[in-house]
Image 1 (tube, one colour):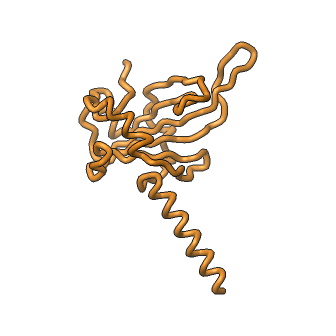
Image 2 (cartoon, one colour; image 1 turned 45 degrees about the vertical axis):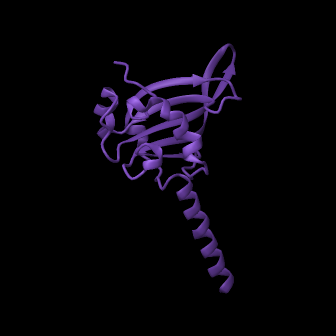
Length: 153
């Protein structure tokens, strides 16, 4: 009985650490129903952003995305990363590798008012340093509220 309580406590601690690693973000399971706004591929496996990327914007964030500014609190963008498969002279999208998430949160002062996180294909948080691993690069787009992707009508 004591062993079971210890196991449950340990599982709860690990789970909360993983949620914190994703910046407290929850996996937005409905992202596939959001507006797809961009796709790109980085085929170099040595690149930190390797893979096929598709950018999805939550409906409440779409007008701000089009304008490049004015993201409301809670606005969320999702970028799934897929493996790059080359076969028979064609480059195609392979299995899902991870899902990156940005969520507007004015309390996230150290990261320009955004929470950043990443999840594995099962929707479990991936540990990462969001300031060094995400926001440092996004600072180059401060004029667009730290969002790289742009609307292309």
